[in-house]
Amino acid sequence: MQSAHPIKLAVFGQPISHSLSPRIHEMFGNQLGIPVDYQAIESSPEQLPERLIEFRDSGGMGANLTLPLKETGLELCEYVDIGARYAGAVNTLKAIKSGWHGYNTDGAGMMLDLDRLGLQVNGRNVLLIGAGGAAAGLLEPLLAAGPNLLCILNRTPERASTLVDRFAHRGNLSAGGLEEGPDLTGFDLLIQSTSAGHNQDGLTLRRDWLNDNARAYDLNYGRAHTGFNQWCQNNELPVHDGLGMLVGQAALAFEIWTGKRPEIQPVLTSIRGVV
Ligand code: ATR
Image (cartoon, rainbow, N blue to C red):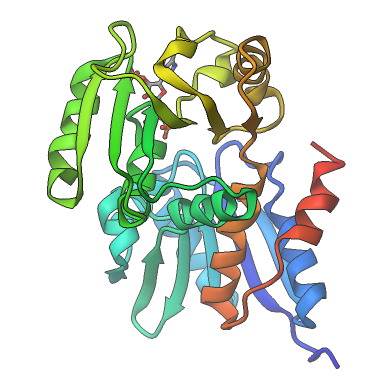
């Protein structure tokens, strides 16, 4: 039986009206018998401290942060978990007595999805395209899964080198420029983390960087996945979009708030019909 009072949750971002998070978390709540009041609240980075106080005062107990607030969120937390610290960004907040505890479930959400799809990282050669905030959030859990090699390629090579320097103690890493390509070939898994698809920009990638049996994973979904998806189809490279990661990171946030992990697959099936 459901309790009478819904838990009060919200996602903050700018823009935010397109967010799928309210729908996803309502479905999680229905699944687990936990009534949820989950709002989408527009906020700029400058407005966030005040918006969070208002939300907290109105009974808010948990929140998600999305673009462009994940870095600002880190500074507003009393405590942050290791994922958030490594990523330099927070996507989940939980109210504690003295403020907020910050987490980053993005990287772990992608790992859940790679598992679901049977994409192995342990012992494999992984090529990560992009070295922005999204890539930074993946590195800790990716390296914890024990790849043989993780190579980061970025349009601006210096950003890839900076990330490699930060994580060099955690595994076998290399960095390079997208234009030059990696020093080695034979990669098993290609992870696309750039925002190029949002501007419908093409990426200059080469199929011969990868094994014949390689597979690809794009952090993007919907329209932003179109260009990379087309490149993969043209190059006979099986590819998965990032919708499962979206639901995975949300499931981990829901678990942080409630102690209960919802099932991902039924929610993923349901939202696949609307993007
Ligand atoms: P996010 O948080 O989405 O990662 P970001 O920190 O602004 O956003 O990083 C965007 C990433 O997409 C970067 O790796 C960026 O490359 P640069 O560091 O060279 O800017 C990459 N990116 C964006 N548009 C791109 C394009 N047209 N071609 C290649 N890479 C692109």
